[in-house]
Length: 75
Length: 256
Image (tube, rainbow over all chains, first blue to last red; front, side, top):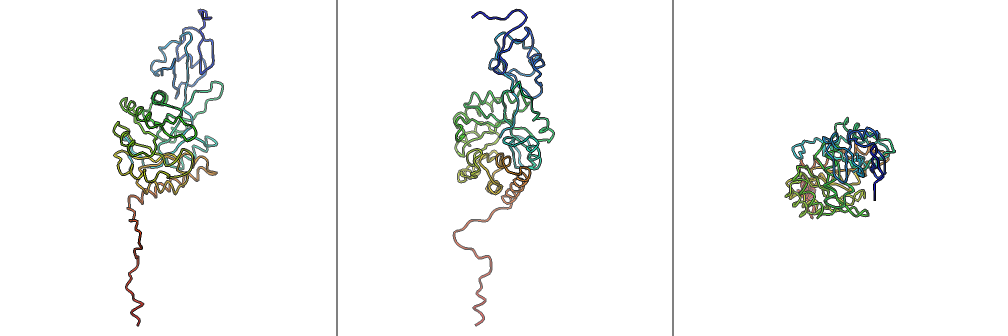
């Protein structure tokens, strides 16, 4: 199916929710955009854990499946 | 002093952070327990909700964090969870738990061994939650696990040391620390585990679901300390017959 994005936005899924975001933004910038605290989270893009050291280099792509995890109470 | 992978612990009581009614209660209970190693789980963030600051207060308590792989149903998912934990918390310590069956939460031994081998090769400090299986515990030790964590009874069941006979074999054989995890419901059960020679116990439900978690945490701390002291002092031999504690000289007979 032909994608519906234009040159300024792309469609991604963030934690299971479809969203339209600006094109050409990095994982780091996405966290800021979504007001997600950067400390103590882990980012998974298309089932691959993205090391923190690469957050500034990885640019979100159209149709990326992005998941943000954090620590919660548990035994 | 207990040492796991070069890290020394003064307290032999490890605690979980789950099931507390409120985060403040959890923090005060952990402080009272004097625990130095606490477990955490991981989940996908709810982007609509406020983000609880769990780690800030835990770090200020000075405890070491032990993220778990709860939710993993097989080795691959557990390995993935360990990688997540490393990126999230910067620690290679991982409580490896793989329990696909939600009714009894029995750990899958085959997937656990597979994941343990891989994670140890990657340099993780692996502490696997397993059934009280002495053979499996040896196999986990062979692939490089830093400790083994056999269960006393099902997670959260408060049934205590239902696996006692097998825990004794594990304790006798193990060359790595043995942490009795799961099912310990009372301080006396924790004390018993320590008297048996366990290196530590991990308690969550019994403290978290108590009417007074902070007080119960203190009780567990005392019980674990006392049990360990008794083990170090050396328990007496159990005999079938009576062994007189007083001299039986028959002095009353000598009246005649």
